[in-house]
Image 1 (cartoon, rainbow, N blue to C red):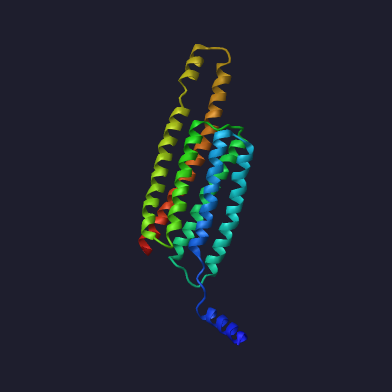
Image 2 (cartoon, rainbow, N blue to C red):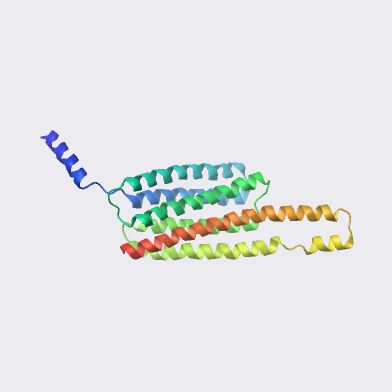
Length: 231
């Protein structure tokens, strides 16, 4: 009897395959994303190498999750929501982690320490990532409630861009170096060159963090699209 039941279950699964839990899979990515955002904030607070390494390790884990989720999506017979939205969710969440890793990696390569702006932006990124996690976590039970989280992601991204513009404006203030050059002070040229190099190095870091926010906003936009579709 049990053998017949097993055959029947296998036949039934072939006719009506189980739908993978894409809600749970994306939630798993979001959990990892928040952990990476926490580590990024801690790195910007302390400058400790171990926190930078943790961001990089979590990003590697994120790559594995992305590959697994994409493979499941490609093989799935049916999905709870639009396939394109699932694809965009998986990809955009992963891209946020990629830019977090790029940020800390280039800070190491360029021998740059965190500053007040990198800490401010990291905290805003964490706020947005936490909102993503909350929102995607609501899709399976109360999707309409996730709209407020999608808006919170958008707000966090806008605040990152405000901080980014303030950081850039501060970074390119060169009046002191210009005055020294005009006055012909000793070592003025060397100081000016160091200022220019330091400015462009740090601008790269701010830009990576801004790009992380752009990808975060994209993930929030997908969340909004899914809410509209299924609620």
